[in-house]
Image (cartoon, rainbow, N blue to C red):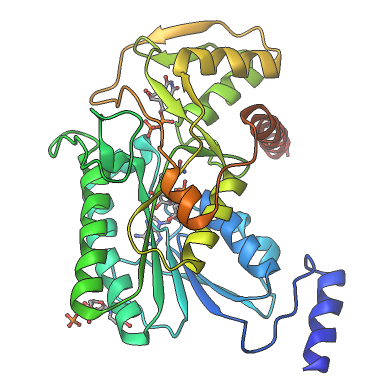
Length: 343
Ligand code: NAD
Ligand code: UDP
Ligand code: UDP
């Protein structure tokens, strides 16, 4: 064991961020589906730094090898190129199931594939969890509440979703993923955790993912018009990615099996949000109003009493602080793409 410990420490100081050394009993083999994506890659960092063995399964639809490349070659890390719509056979203790496109333009690009990923893909992950006796955490979403009639949204609200609209592939896909999880729990006794994740932002968001945070920051940094869809009176509540990762890890470790909202309850209209970003970037951008998008939820804010009570979790990072980190990230990305276009 001492030999192993010094090996990891040496590697940590030479090539990799320093990882904790865990003895065999505490170290877990953890599968992260969608681990090369935005949220997944931050979770992978947390689990790797904690000394666990991590297997990432990703088809790179929206994820990138670059998000996890700093771990490639580390003996605790494995990156598997695989589409979860096909069965997969691995031996693991825990599964964080994040594989699914998440931004509206991405999931609408191929709605059938989005449904297959969230239904057939989730069946495969639950089948795997059943075979190996692993605990599985499903990344669900505030979109299960649709365009909500209850505000703020608590986990007991059943939602208001258009089953045949353009967002349905994602919303209904995630609702079925939840249904499947509880069916497997009841019928097969598998250990399930369900996180209903609210809008999340941070470094490693995809440049072209079309979500409001990435759009507004990139527009502001380039002095382009900031595009508000519709009146801008619709609201969202944004959480920073490190808070989400804290919540996911706490949920996996807890005994609580019902769905739990993980989000930041500080709510802003999209119009206010445009001004906040404009001011932080210090841009000359104009704010313009474009056509509203179909079925756009008008209000969204999590009730996080459950997470506070059962996970002792609440978000810590203030919006402005998270946005500064994210603005710096996008500024660097713009530099990088300019350089690579020149060379
Ligand atoms: P992302 O698009 O950056 O990451 C998703 C990852 O899943 C990508 O790496 C992608 O390549 C992979 N993937 C997609 N389909 C796959 C398939 N069939 N097989 C294997 N891999 C596949 O998105 P994200 O923002 O990191 O979201 C991660 C999870 O969290 C998703 O399940 C999403 O629904 C959920 N979520 C995210 C947010 C948010 O605001 N970011 C909000 C609610 C829920
Ligand atoms: N599955 C998988 N990996 C495993 C075990 C199962 O991908 O390690 C898939 C398998 O292809 C199956 C699905 O998960 O279609 C559901 O498994 P389950 O055992 O519930 O169903 P069954 O095999 O009985 O149809
Ligand atoms: N939005 C906007 N301008 C943009 C991108 C998005 O006004 O350039 C709006 C969008 O219509 C929605 C909100 O911002 O009301 C959040 O959109 P996003 O796609 O980020 O997430 P989701 O709709 O899934 O919450």
